[in-house]
Image (cartoon, rainbow, N blue to C red):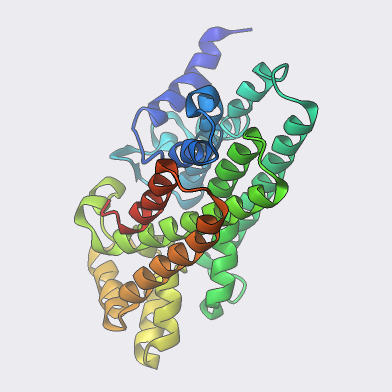
Length: 315
């Protein structure tokens, strides 16, 4: 084999992307779940990277699909290395994090491995469905302007809730949790994953610091994204404002003036505030089930504080 080729076309683009940082909250979630279930996080540290590497692969390919310019303060991978390398490297990142499972297969029971692989396959299918739905909407397909809140939540459960759910469920399986506990923790993680996305959408429209890293405020407007904020505005807005917002979203404009106009329309109907309260309520409700499930401990309190942070963060 040719190491130079693999380094140039796989290792370099992947490490360039990973070294940019990112919030990396999914491995933290994984380790907090392990600790809350009474196990030592250090013993399962190698497995915590599974959802995070996959997540970065999805971002790399998502940037290609959206023809994005910047990610984490630098040009996107496809801008630096080319479309072909970015797509291939992104795909590789869907499978590379499974290597710790293969490496440690002698230490894990066949039943446990089977459960983890099933979780992985199901969630990878889900994330593709979620991305497909999101793409269809921001391309103006499938009655994008009639998307309901319920449909949006289903899309988010597929797209953004998936890797959080994967992190929590794999952690629970590795900790020998019951099937019921695995499912309940998965639902909790899904909820905070969706709430995290809603907060991201809010920050995209309201935070200058957040916008700097993405190349300007309102990148979701350029994508034509049908977020919870947009859906709420379209439900509440006067016909003139509704028509204008749809018009701007369908332009896929990079004009900051037009993006600011769309933001003003959304703020006019308090849609950012609505989305914020929606996310807060979702996390609070999902915690009630976990609160009954887990025994009192410092780890449990940290898990609760972590969930709250994901919704209240400023960047």
